[in-house]
Amino acid sequence: MQNVTEESPLMGTEEDEHGDDISFDTQTELSMTHISTASHQSDAFSTGSQIIGEKTDGDSKGSEGGMGDFNVKDDLMTEARKAHLYDEQVLAADQLSARLIDTRGNEDVDHQIIKDELGISTHSIFNFDVSRHSSRSENNYIKSSEILNNGDYGSFDKKMVNETPQNGNGVSMIKPIDQGKQMPPLNDKGVWDTIRKFFAMVCLAIAAVFVILVLFVLGNIVAGPPSQPVGPYKLVEVQEGEDFFTHYNFYDGVDSAGSNGYVNYVSMQTAFDLGIANVTYESPGDVFGQSFSNYYNNTNDEEAFVYMSTAPTEDGPRESIRLEGIRRYNRGLFVIDLHHMPAGCGTWPAFWLTDEGNWPLNGEIDIIEGVNNQTVVKTALHTTQDCSMDDVPLGVKTGFWDTAQGVPKKDGTIDHTLRDADDCFVYDPHQWLNQGCVAISDEKGTIGTPLNKKGGGVFVLEWDPINRFIKSWVFTPHKEVPTNLMESILTAKNSEISDRVTPDPSLWGLPYAYFPIGQGTKCSSSHFRNMHLIFNLALCGTVAGNRFFMDCPDLNKKYGSCNKYIASNPEAMNELYWKIKGVYVYQRAWEKSWA
Image (cartoon, rainbow, N blue to C red; front, side, top):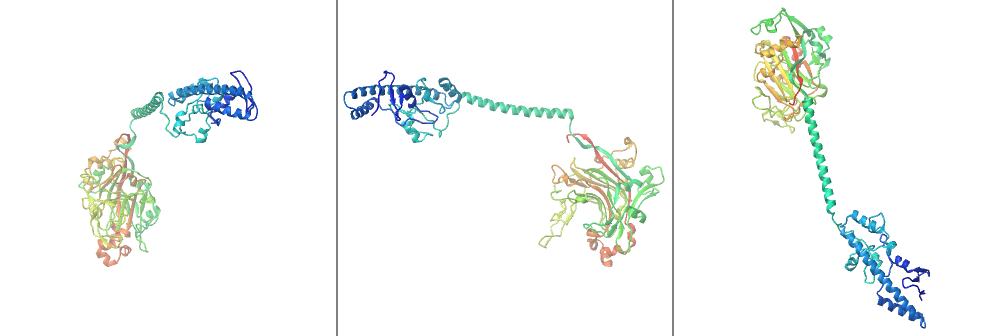
């Protein structure tokens, strides 16, 4: 049986379940729900008629006499006031809910409304204690009748909804937010703020690119184009007379396994002691229709010539010379004034560029190379893979490509297809091993015995990676040498630079060999680098020796092999020597250029 104490019409007390007295205001506050924790009273208040019925039944069972009627009337008045207060509180909550909904999810506005109404700092609508303000604020609750009626409880489970306080009309005091649905869109102000920030960043990026371009242009105007070796040729090395051998090291030892020549290369001291390396002064002769003195503009009676040859040994292989240049090159114009070269069966002389320590990675360029009785000069390039010359422009050279035919296949059959030897890869499967790309002069008698009979000639290699080519010329006899080239040779030793003539290949006519290299070609210029000049005089070996039976069939029949022929020390060995007037190396001057 409840204990009811009579109080003012506006105030009353009840005992809680533990028997403690609770003021009506306090009970009202406790009947409200703390929204952030979802801890609500479990029973909603009933309508007035229901309350009266319940109280009448309860008192009739629990009291005797006239006091029961008085207590029932008191309870009716108290419960009616409670229902009236709840209706007012629901109305206030609905008003606050409407204000919050009108903000369309703008948290800044929500925060300001709640802060003004409740005096708290947070702006989350589920994170404030509304029960403390139940009798002080008109807008404390969020209507949720729509959710209750529809059964859509959002992120709340049914237990939480069932525990939600309700007014007499079955309206919940809390409207949960459905976190599973898409949040309302930004308001117009938020959208325009985002758009403005985006365009500001785009404009900033455009401005930065513009500033960089302006600085680049201004830098080029002030500093100018980059410096590159595209200017006129300048003399960098003259190898003549007594100074000739100072530009080289003498290799001392057997020939490499790749060449396997039937020779022993000797040191400088041994070479001079044997007389196979020397500088000889000779009287000028009338060989080209003009005297040597007129050609070289020499007032003296003699001119210095460099000689290199071989000497026999008791064991058979001949003593020979291999010179390796001291200076390394990555470009240049290489000129040799040659008056005699080794020739005849069994010979394999060469004047070439390479980096033998990194072969074939850094490439090889053969400027002059003769094998046995060959009489036409060739220029050959040897590289790693991806260096093809099948893109040579028309009208840039007078020579033609060497060919490859009868090359053995991997399956043991023979490839009888005739192909141009225009792939520089040393292991190209359709060419002979280490054949490389080989350009042949269209002029006969340019090496070997025919060249020697004409008194030699001038050979030129132009290696220009900036202008993307390698070219070769041969001029024989000397009277065919272009004037510009002749004058550059004659004035090379002048002490005053202004007295030297600059070689200009554009005045010499078309070269017989043209190899496109560098950007835009099928052969990177990086295939050729860090190379030095080499002179050597090999005998027999993997080329001259292997071809001996074809090129010199009579001697092969008589001696049986190239090595046996050389070991016999025939009189023909007297023609195994180089006679050189000089070697001249030029390089283009560095200039600022956009080329």
